[in-house]
Picture 1: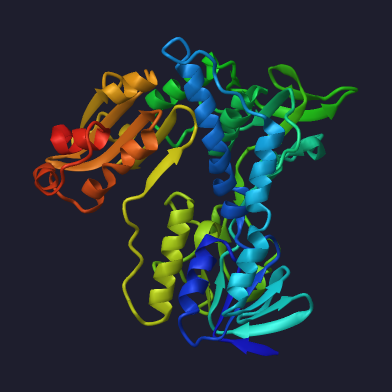
Picture 2: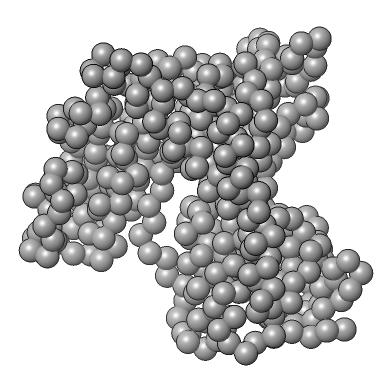
Length: 441
């Protein structure tokens, strides 16, 4: 039985960050992954999705500018776009594996626990007193009749041919972003959600701006609607709901994501978990003192995002290598949905602040700026949340909402006053950053 200083189960952003830091030490490390090396984000998640969003944005902005100096809107050649995407990303898993293998042992296969500090992969057993689980999440699949006819976001991101009509089950980040991409490419889109509105993590007023813009582009929303099954017909499929039947060519189950823990035999290692993932303490340690967990696989209130996973990987390296004894302290985290328009937020949530005398809110319409007027962005709105003189939260909707919110993260995270910001920074003009320095805070 081989023994290691560290065993990393998974190779996604959290584990990759940790493995790169361990590569600078003399530690003996084993990295195991049963799926693509590199994990979801670079292979079939945020990176290829945002790659496709580049072409999507050009098309939708050109449509927005027709009659304002643009005579003909751009269009997407789906096969060519997908070929370009595959050419960029197909080699990444092997390249990632090769990079890790330069410093550590690697094994392709699914790991499961044999005891408190032993795992088995492909019939081989490995032991360590510091095992780190970083297996991430995968798409949730609804247990409905005809579930075999549904697809996941992973399928969509390598879809060779563009269907005429695509139906999404669920209205979260994944559905809204992929619906934006496929809709811009020319597919008809229906989004079905059992809730009253999509993107429930974001402020309702700003989500309404996004949905109205999508509806104007022909995307159909069926809210307060439950999917009961999918059946195949001669041409395409029928999605059965409690409100009727929807004929479609392609069904994507975007009903949520779930932690990748079912293969691990956690009970054998006395590792506790909940519906949201593996339970950890303030040092990312599980109920088994030999086992830690990082990334999207853990149960935590912070958003499950790649930068958060990487932050945990860096923290755990410092903690296990004796560089810190402090509990993990998460920084201010910005989140966004790359729809069109985008929606983003950070810090105290707008709906928490509304009606709470502890906070004061200021909402601004951004459409009057020269930048917004030049892009014909009529959707831009920004809400700032203050606690006394301190900026503690921000939310935005608009063509550049993610960048707009990023402008405020240093002010919130560094806890500086508006005057300190203005004395330290003269931002590029004309852009929202200039308005920040010019007196928005």
